[in-house]
Length: 606
Ligand SMILES: [Zn+2]
Image (cartoon, rainbow, N blue to C red):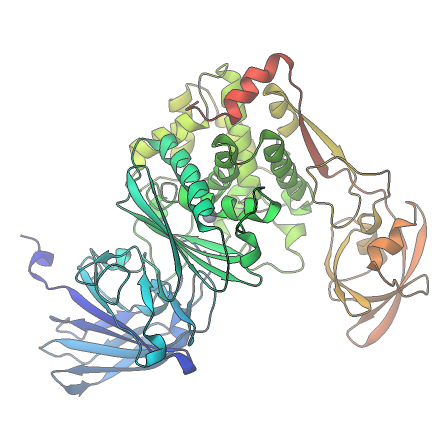
């Protein structure tokens, strides 16, 4: 018998005690605490979001007691406490401030409550494998009468969608089921043999039947890729709709999503607009993670070390491959057309080509340094780093197309994903394992390509590989700073801001420089991030901003720029450069490659 078998469950309770002050009261009771003095810790980060966030900073108060008597508890480091040794059951109670309306945070006011486990649940050090019970309590007061609870955590006495007792097999599971508390709308469908629910909080008037219908197709598409049945007993999309917002965090049986209410489909609306398409892409992304990163996971995350950074070079696969399949699933299940898909792909390639940092940082390094770079972006980020989401998804694309081409369409990245799922569905993927499995599953020698795509800064062979599946890739100059690519140019209009090599945001009458791009005209002229541009050739840019003012100018011309740096007015002379052909348009060539094209974007298991 293992020691754990005789230990009783760790009992947690959480109550939205003071919505007015955004305070949860969370308690944790250990029946048989460490005789040397039980330690408790809050995670420094949340799985899926690779930044040290030090959730302990939101602990407002903490106290301990045993059999009704106070027990001394003190801090060992920024997120660890130790209680004085006691023989009997030990309870720790803390108040936790919750005013972070993000998918990885905790939030509470009189309209609703949400929490992501790592923000609120103390880890009982040394007892991570012990079963946990959680009592979720209703706040006091008539106004909370209609509140319900939405979570994928297993109920242990609580009624469906109700307050009461829930259970988790261990601490890792306890913190992997985010919880929404409040009044929410529900939609339900079945996919992969299990029930799926959508709970939407916030003011919205979404067409729920349509949302359920569309999500069912997306989920079934992913289930079909990996097997026949969804890998969980139920799944929950927890959606918070606000005015402007975007974000998602994956969990084993649910996802927490933040969106704009305008991203949701309206009743009576038939078409799939840009915003709804991107919401479906987000849902698709997080659902794919239920396999790729929640179950197939890096050895570096098995188990997670919640005290510090967990380094891996594999985020290109766990985020990049997931990003590749998120939109791909939408076209494969027929929610968007192939032309829409090529437009989305064109935009992703455009975004990659507009990142000079792709010549500085390899994909493996981008992943390893996620903690200090991708998650801590600053004004120099586009010049110094590359996104493991964007480049990772393009490497997944290249890999898929290469495999399809070399095997004459017999094999694809789908085969690699299925092999990974069979072999590593329970985690523990070594740093070179995916490369090995890709070779085994396809019978191809891929090492040279992985070396170039993952560990060097060489350009990806996108044009050649797309051509093998009947897609032509063309590059042109941007038309304006709002031109994201994917579509043909509307006119022969010059490129405006692109000739200057900066990114700006409007700030009253001025244009605030947010980024100065490597090697561009503005950098050569001496402009810096933070400069507030007030005049071009002595004139205020006026309506339309810098973009419109520069659209009348030609490359090679010199413009006088006046800008404030802090409180000092400076003047610069910039020689407008030829705008880079960094805007991608993809089109289907048809003809003999039509069959390959359809096999790639079609719905069958290819
Ligand atoms: Zn992701």
